[in-house]
Amino acid sequence: MPNYHIWTIGCQMNKAESERLFSLFEESGYQFVPDVADADLIVINTCVVRQNAEDRAARKLQNFKPFKKARPDMIIAVTGCWVESNTDQLKKRFPFVDYFFKAGECPPWVDRTKWSQALPKEPQPATYVPIIQGCNNFCAYCVVPYRRGREKSRPLSEIVCEVKELARRGTREVTLLGQNVDSYGHDLPEKPELADLLTELNDIDGLYRIRFLTNHPKDMSLRLIKTVAQLEKVCKSITLPAQAGSNEILQAMRRGYSIEEYRRLVTEIRSEIPDVGLVSDIIVGFPSETEAQFQETVNLLTEVKFDTVHLAAYSPRPGTVAAREMADDVSADDKKRRLTFLERLQENIVTEINAKLTGKTIEILVEGKQKGKWYGRTGTDKLVFFNDDANCMGKLVNLRIDLTSPWSLQGTINY
Ligand code: SAM
Ligand code: SF4
View: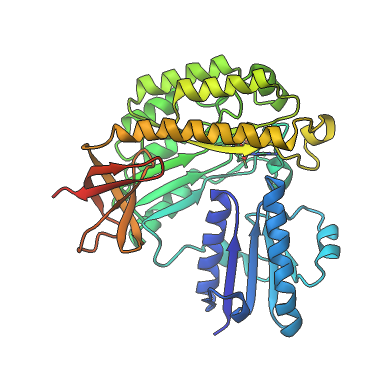
């Protein structure tokens, strides 16, 4: 039986696409091996959202070169956002690679019909389901629309069928994925919205929870917020990247909303969905960002108190508007200092938020075991560990929270 290995870096969409590749190879009779030296087929699924992710992929690929030299029959393939339509440069730089195929596309040596039906035989309790590919937004800093193309929604009935099948095979929670899930359906003939999809998925037997990400502050509707509030299975967790706290920077980033509009949206979400978990993304050191403008991001985080913030230092990406038209004029030291400041601030904020959960009973979906302890997530997406002798995998359990930290919680099962 031939062996395969997949290496993945980057966002949830990459992870979802790698999961699909796993299923496809398993279906085709391949066996996963953790050590690349034993593999007959290696796929690396890459990310180029920031330079350091691209550098890691390049280093990884170079490491495979000796294996290929020793075993020329080994197949090496590269996918993910590194692969552009024109692969000439990559082919020149990495001549030992057999195939380059674009993110989310069928591997060129595989039958297309198999690709569209590739679902895990025994899926994890929590599984990703892409619902819309690509992005039409062209934020000034972002390479994604150049690599993943324009928005393309999957038909609603296809997603519902897939989730029913996943639930039948053991999935208990799905996370619906898209660069901008609020755009879901606008390109389909019936123009369904994300709220319609959530309503249909909510009725699926055996499925306990539904999540979705990422929302775009310029597009999120009141109808969606009310739907999340009403539907029992939809987790009360919203990923709403702010990116910056200053209007000048938001405008330069071409985000399409003001910080006042963003704050109003947060107020609306919190009034419709009390105790919602809020997640945001922030970039520090975008071209021309002054200390005063950075302070506006500090104010935003201090006032909103997000449950999670993904922080990144601006990294110029070739081909984007920011890289073409704006000087990368915030020094590396200033970027680092701003990043560290926000990391500490956010750690203090989450310490406080999580401490309030001590003594409360919270439902989690158990996703696995780590170092002898079961773990799972709350509806608001907080990681919780607990001990129990029973097999809790894939079950919803009520835990009394005993200990909290900024990164995870510990609880005791409440029978
Ligand atoms: N579609 C989502 C949105 O609208 O925010 C996120 C997609 S993007 C691939 C994930 C995150 O990477 C972004 O939210 C942003 O914070 C970060 N990012 C994207 N381009 C970046 C860049 N050039 N430098 C630093 N961070 C970047
Ligand atoms: Fe990138 Fe903006 Fe699209 Fe998100 S919405 S993927 S940040 S262009």
